[in-house]
Length: 164
Image (cartoon, rainbow, N blue to C red):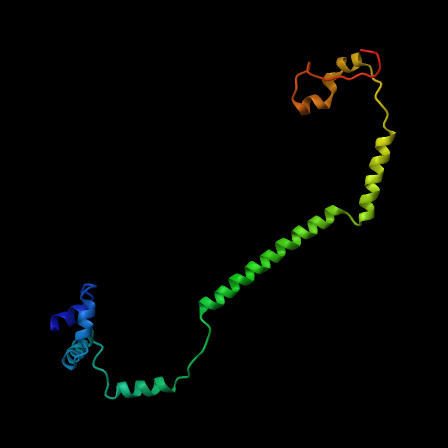
């Protein structure tokens, strides 16, 4: 038994033996050996023996200390994390809402006016009377060819009336 207690104090007991050694320490003689080994360790380190009445004075001072009831650090850090997440969400919603409202314009009347102006301009546009041969000769200057990515000979030209 003494060897197991010594190995336990030195941290050399296997994980499967710890329970058996700790169960054996519940006996009075094993506890006396435990205390003896600790006194020997204190003497070897030069810390000396504890003074008389140490346990009683420690118990009195410990009982006199106030009990501090404070929230755990993990709980307060979770609250801070949630607070930052809520603040970031509100900021993102505000930015998206502000951007959307600035793109929509001031009033629905302004949107209706713009639609009306488009309808009036479309009615004023008349049919193009540019000859087809002119369009064929100047098709390289057309911005549509570069945008559509078609070659110079694939341009569609429409005419009105009987002319080809």
